[in-house]
Image (cartoon, rainbow, N blue to C red; front, side, top):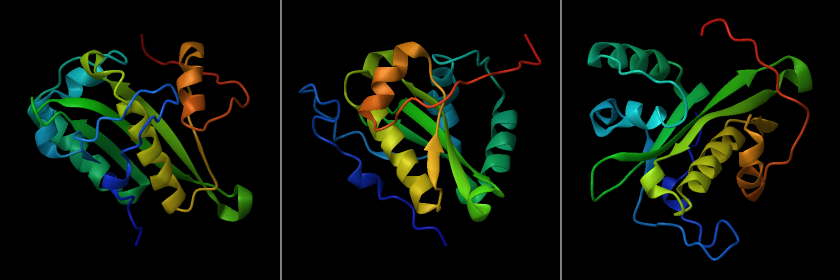
Length: 171
């Protein structure tokens, strides 16, 4: 059984290295079914196209992802003052034949609400997910980002490697 990272340990001070202090009163945890009503899907819309979905479809997708257990984790940060989800990200574990049947963690969908940026919440999410990948036995964790976000991810310990390519099947 995988030992999950302790969310309380993701409260860095000066995580950005620029004097910005982490907001310790914002706990990090895994996604819960009730988070749909707390703006989770709306928050994802700040990252990419994410039209509203019905409660039934949210519950169905939540069940699908939950069935994957530790191989797919979505974490959130909820603002205790408003009850809204203000940051999220996910990691999924790819099982490979390379590296002696190793595993690779893929971090995806990192977003912090525009009203909550500058509090090191994104760095806390990324570090939580990277530690989950480490605990799952991954030999590396990777992500894709825009050139504008390169500096953010470097502050989180990532280094630029190779080139990302994509093929989209829908508009």
